[in-house]
Length: 211
Length: 191
Image 1 (cartoon, chains in turn orange, purple):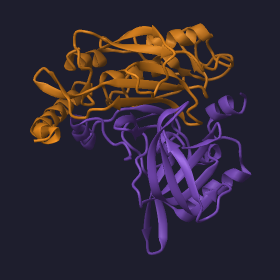
Image 2 (spheres, helix red, strand yellow; image 1 turned 90 degrees about the horizontal axis):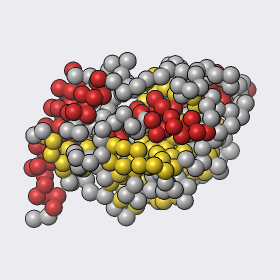
Image 3 (cartoon, helix red, strand yellow; image 1 turned 180 degrees about the vertical axis):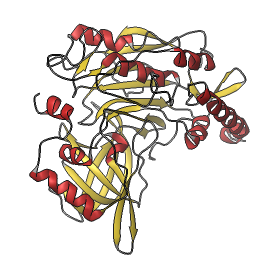
Image 4 (tube, chains in turn red, purple; image 1 turned 120 degrees about the vertical axis):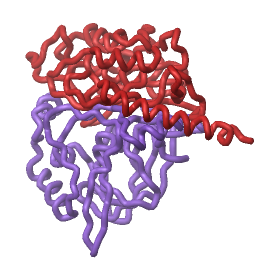
């Protein structure tokens, strides 16, 4: 019997459990994508590649931009800031990388899940999740960024809170999806100059993922 | 090579239910999307292939045979190749959350931008519309995929919008090139 056939019943059960969890979790103001990191005892490393960032015309300095990106990683228990790297985001190299890219005129950030095995599952509190191997995030170099250190709008104009966008994307990196609570970091929309931080909803989501 | 739809069996089931993951895009009017685009075309997807680009990493090259031109220097019958932000190569999958999913043989309206001379669909799945044809009339509905976080205040239209209606709005932007969205004016016109 091949691997797919062997795992089919497990996956079917896992899908049901994960979706049931998702429905329940909506009421708890968190949402699970159905993937998670395999090791609950060790945070996944997230590296930052600062190359390519545009520093002119920003509300904050280059070092503040770097701090804002990495500050999006540190609130999450499932991941940790592993320092800088020259590895590129959206390359299958075993490293979770957040970096900068030219993403065009409308895209602020892209999160990519990279996987070469769709059938390995990870148990958590009686549920099964798909194994997450690598997640990379690319942030745009097109738009102006700010953070708590720069205010919004700044003298250069309106901007997006880099720490908030980074933290939101990292929420997806650990396996959270969108919720309906507008004040939540994982709400699917936020306004220009709107800053948000990880809160109790996201912490509950982390616990549901057994991190 | 296949377009990327899922990460795993569990997440597939959840995605088919209600779950959403995210990439972040700016909420824009159709007119501003047209202003950002080099091409706005309707066409049939002839094929797609995953590849690795030196700067962009995993991506999918989509071949589109043009049937209607709303904007840009391209002829009906020509094939345009543009790129999505994820792809599959040698069994390794990179799924860009919120990216458009194309089916070979299907027609789409695509807003296509040029980034460093390479063509991409604009704003992941925000730049892609499905096509419905009935009684010789064509209309478009935004082919939004789960996983997009919309940033900003602009109302995002989803359609349906007729071909003449869409063509009229796109052509208007050639006469009025200034952006509607203040952030685009501030960030793109001044930098």
